[in-house]
Image 1: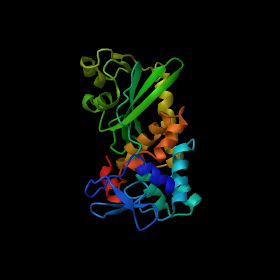
Image 2 (image 1 turned 60 degrees about the vertical axis):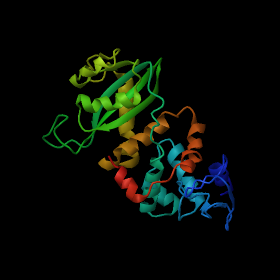
Image 3 (image 1 turned 90 degrees about the vertical axis):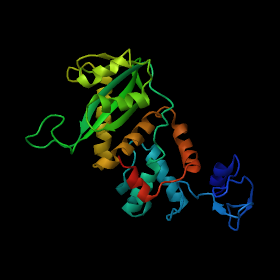
Image 4 (image 1 turned 30 degrees about the vertical axis):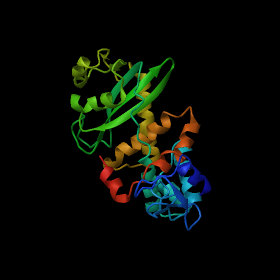
Length: 278
């Protein structure tokens, strides 16, 4: 609690009720009381750790396992490990996911490959991309570097139209990037905006080996760790995966998350988490 208080108020106190910047010690340890309006606030109030009923030690442990375990952690495993109900583990995990969204301040540059794919169980007698709404449609963009890959992002889309595919370009790809896609017609109109965009036949993935490896790894993680992800919450799981992926070589920056975003941003409620679903 002492450490959380330092992280929350290390740069100064600001009352969330009246905006006053001076406070004195509250009635309880690690509480502050506003000198103007008298409002008292704890070190965990309005953070990821707000109203945690199962203890901060367990909460810290869950965050560590979710963020630093190689494959992540699902709610069933967390519930067994920390002796809480699955609903409790699920809600805490979903609250943490709200802090893993990309800021959008670091667009992909250099060589970038973009591809679209579906995740879901095929239905007997039905083939093709548009045959069922039960599948989740996703577009992914990956930086291609010499012998390896850089950062990557993925977004859930409604369909494979130009309008839907453009969302990841607008959000995550620099205008001067050398973008390469397959021959899908939905990318062609984007050449007017992204002048260095080129198209090439995929040949069943043979011409795009790096991005197809990342698609396969993502699918294996979703099916292996989580088995099932509700379609409405799917984007949050993509954000979680690529938050860890983009920091795979800088584990310390993942640890920073524990005491940065969750301490400076208000935690979402259950009703808000449901409303966030795309």
